[in-house]
Amino acid sequence: MCTNGVNAGQLKSTIEQIDEAVALTRRWTHRSFHLADDGGQKRTAEKLHQAQSLLDDVRALLGEAAEIVEYETESGTDVTVSLV
Image 1 (cartoon, rainbow, N blue to C red):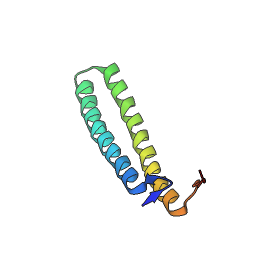
Image 2 (spheres, rainbow, N blue to C red):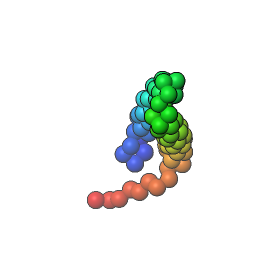
Image 3 (tube, rainbow, N blue to C red):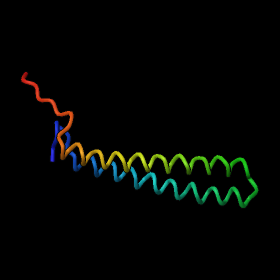
Image 4 (tube, rainbow, N blue to C red):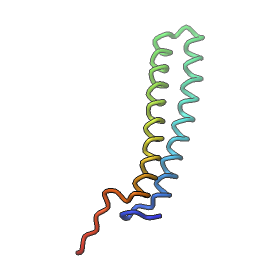
């Protein structure tokens, strides 16, 4: 469905694809964290752990964005039609 010139289904699908890419990146970061930690590279492991937390935050925000796309599509909020 298009709302205000935006194909909401396509936008939601794109957000979901971004989330999948971030999830994959998070898994690789987690594996790298364990490699660094097991190898005694504590500072590297710490930074990778911080990156994991930030990627978790990104995924949460993407989830919220996907929900908002649905809400705004259903409610039609902030839609303005102008005669030109």
